[in-house]
Length: 409
Image (cartoon, rainbow, N blue to C red; front, side, top):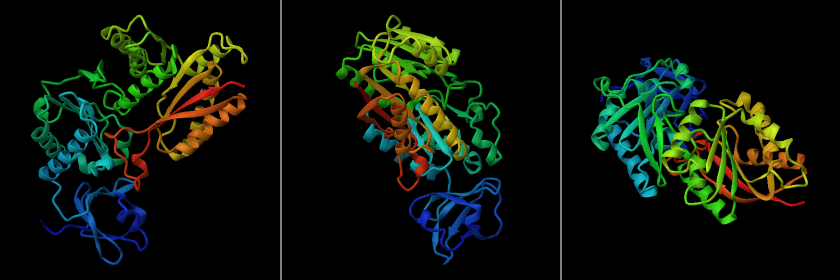
């Protein structure tokens, strides 16, 4: 390798890097030798000149360097093949029956700025760093070498791309030679159910793969509880609704504000023979809950549900908006608990890493207290193994879920 530009860190800033965090902010940098170009490979050393690793540089980003290796090595196709192989091996060990999953989860797989989701034999890539974008051809070549995909697509609609100086315009397939053979829709299998996925305009890279195991876990819990009438809020394309109705006599009312999502959810239910058990409505969930609670009485179970599922999109994208997010979480729990039967189940999720599990539970408990209700936690729903967590990188842990029993008073 040719001599690399060197980033020297300020005294006292290397500990978090040594502990495994790959992000280096501008404020941690003491000086730079041989000023690198944006997207170039650099080496990082601490204040005592001890080598810390190699990474990708971007002066336009708040994250000036993203470390990719603790060794001095080329970031090329061979490097990406090794990392992708490691990532695939982990999924095969922990999710051997999954035909769709997250193959690469950025920092959780030591590939900061890169997400790859596998939808059967179609792969969707999301890149949030300039250095990764400049190496897209090496990444896709390594992916083809390892997985032999039918199609690879890139999604560029992440807002975070803008702070890296990257375009958010509609991309073509990757590499460009695939432009005439795009896969914009796919049918995937999750826990024995079929779901249609829009790989161009669907949320995230097309679907909420991070709930794959929780879909089944919630269904199993409702079976144990004997729940029959279920409300599924923020259903998106019916992930929870279809799972809790399959192999059961349950009925589900599923709500979402997106008409496109509700149309796809309805099609998914029909395709799986669950159309008669699932009712889907395009509504504002907050408004619907507010109206529904007026039809109930606090001391009666009439018109109430055996189980309520809350799986909203993230209410916050940054720390500055956490306060508003917590108020939103409290409001939706206040209203949901008012239409839940005594001994019924509240199943709730939060997908923002800015809201830790303790804070989320505190909001739920406060909502119950304001309703003069008491909850008993009976289950925890973790982030799945295809979204691996590195404890020293808090940003890798974002999804948390709980199930509570509403105790009679």
